Every structure is written in structure tokens, then in C-alpha cells.
Length: 113
Length: 113
Image 1 (tube, chains in turn red, yellow):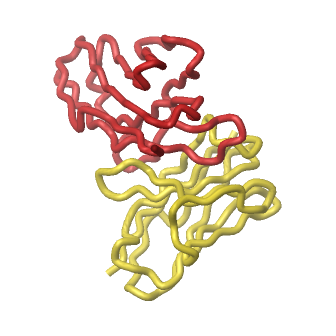
Image 2: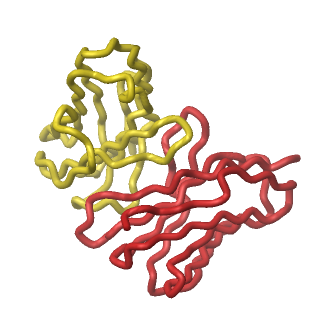
């Protein structure tokens, strides 16, 4: 119940295309869903996050779509660029009073120039 | 504003030894969380420190222990090292005992031989 399942494991997208990464969770107590981006040799960096009271959040080229009834959420990267090539992690936590974040296994994105 | 810094960046130990990893939190952050990231996996929560006390713990044995100091910096100690402890250890800082908006350091790569 504490797991966050992420797919695909890896993704290759042409420059300018849309990258889509999906995640699913089971614990309905989760109320904060962040996405992190990690480059080799670096720690994860917060990209964008959403709470379950909204169905979509957009920041620049990055959009989270959230489906509360299906317990699924996804990251869309519009106009993907080679600089977006990194590993992306979805995550979930019980933000209010919660102390830990559960991470998905990650998606390695490669954007071809 | 200083970011999260971790030391050392790399460490090689032998099975059975003990290790101490260090973390300085981001300016203005009073909460430190530690995560273990195995190769090709998402970070796994070890524990969190807030106001110099352990605020929550993941599924790690007692040989993983920690400290937080009055300046909010933190240490992770691992006793009786096992081969499976080989991983990237990440420190993340945040505010107010929560795990939202985690700011990660670049990690310490620990190899146990």
C-alpha cells in the first residue's frame, strides 16, 4: 500500500516531442505528489508537485495530470529538449504531518537531438 | 543562500566496518531526511530529524542511526557494514518537520567491499 509504481522504465523522445511518464499509487492517505528530476552525479531536484484537490498543474513546459479516482498521475514534458535528458521520479507523501516521501523506481528519459 | 552539502562524496569501506556521513542543511531549513538510493532505483527513506530528534523512520535496521545538531546539520552512522549497504546516500533538507519541497544534496557514494 505504500508503493508508488512508475512506468515506463526508460523513454526515448525526439526533440520537440512530448514525454509522458505515468505513476500509480494505492494509499488514499497520500496528499502530496511531487516529481523530481535527477541528473547523473547529482541529487534529485524538485520539478513540480500537485495536491489531489486539483486535476492539473502546469509550470512552463511541465504539466502534472492527476486522476484521483484512478489513483494515477502523470508528468508531461512538452517540447522536450536534449537538456531534459535525466531520470525522473514520481513520489507521494502524506504531506500534512508526514515525514517520509515514497519514490517510484524512476524513468530514464533520453531526448534525441 | 547555501544549498545542501554532503561529505565525503565517495567512500570505500570493508564489510563489518562503521561509517559516518555528514550533511549540512540548506540555509533556513531545520529538518533533515536521509535516503538510500541503490543503483537504478528510487531513493528509500531511512529517517528524518527535526529539532534534534528522530521524527520518523523507514524500514531500516537499528544499525542505521543518526544525529542532528543545533545548527541543523546531521550525521548518518551505519554500523557493521554489509555488502548491500553499497549505495548513494542522500540528505535532504526541508522546513518545519515536513517532507514537502525536499532539497537534496549530491550524495555520498558508499562502496562496501
